[in-house]
Length: 115
Length: 116
Image (cartoon, rainbow over all chains, first blue to last red; front, side):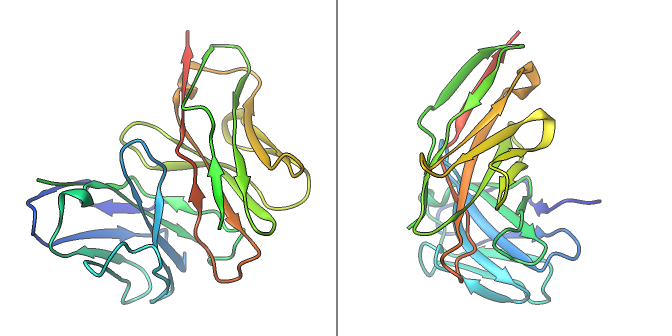
């Protein structure tokens, strides 16, 4: 079956602009996660959704970052007033129910470059 | 807080030789442990996980890992490496003592190079 998909695969923007990154999880998965991977580092947690609600947004670095999942499927990560330090690969993952033993399946990521 | 350490940035082995990628963890309670592999310009692919039960876990592509509670380790192993195993490997942990904590904490990754 189809895995997690993310669009766009690459996004280049200018400092100060607004960007939206989209994630389409595996069908039937209720849990969705966003991570950020900077060069040479492992992924770092940003936010976790269970259904439509953000169950844990403790990883969002500041109020420029926001994510939604209005219908409990597709999610959009929104970044306002982008900064050069936001440049990274943004990874989305989904799991069946969010249980702590669940496997998270990752998408290919969106590479964001802020000039 | 939960954390993972991968003490080796790079591991180089010859094809056909055993491959080991090291991982140690730190959690408040008991861990759930995961290994993922990342190929260039691709997302993370799940290899295997330890939840409970047998300390030796078998996963995809001939990989296995052994959970050692006394040494707080979860090393990834493959008896005979292939050139196609060359990739970036990540260990991750989730602390099950925190009922509302669902995130994975990842190590910095280990680059594996298998030479022909």
